[in-house]
Image (tube, rainbow, N blue to C red):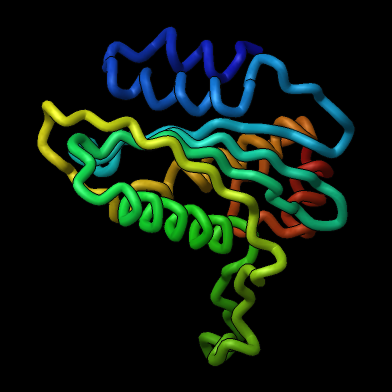
Length: 189
């Protein structure tokens, strides 16, 4: 029942972790969020492989027949930022890829093995379904660069899943977050 941002901050001593969470919350006006039926917001955070970039993501979703991610806001600390444009591109690409994994991508299996053998049988996020992505870089020129590759994937999936739970009041534990899996989670409740 605790606020997800307050809960994380209460249990985090790492100032860099706290900074990215606070930046993402501030940029999305987390405390000013207005709940509406079928809409939710969620937070995800990770430090890549516990050694690399710090990344916090706030996802804003709409849940109807399908889940639609309307907006992703990411705050990232990669240490010294050498190429800001490159970091933003890497983080945005990772967030979009993770959104596709979280909502659509799934290898289908049949009696004889894999049945999704081509792009026609393997669903991915369409350009028209891609969310708006905002990125805030926290530059730490006094610290070494740690790279941005793959820092966004885990926390983006977590933020989307947490936003769906916020919208529906039910936790879906398997990906992708299809309507069938959401209905099954509601029925188990």
